Length: 150
Image (cartoon, rainbow, N blue to C red; front, side, top):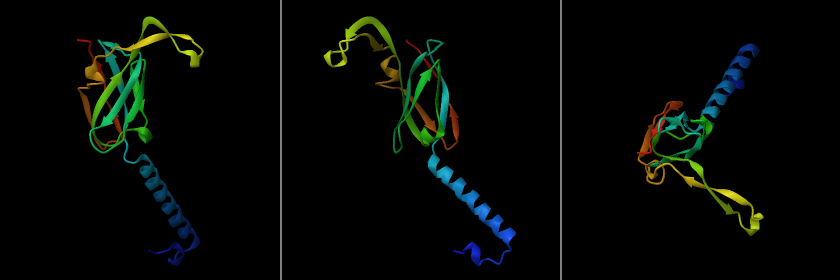
């Protein structure tokens, strides 16, 4: 390894070499912090309408980390630093809505009466998901999900 102070450079060139080294180190460091992850975003609709709220989970089918996004007004987004790594994923989408029933939160929670919610998307989109996606090595992926009750 050659140290900058061993090179026969004048002060201006030495500063330029140091600057280039710092920039390269920063770029390599930024990429390693991303860890090869991919930003993912898109839309989620249910029976032709944007899903108001819910959650999209990318569960790796091999090595990798799970990535989770909240659905808000039919859209979801995962930043690259929290996104999935390239690979194959099972996608699980959940959404809950109030049933109209009420239940007590229990003695420990002050016996508040709260709405009871139900998972209303079919199991083929969450528990027994039939959804999958393969994520490549691109820095960003757009993927939309069109879900149907039937």
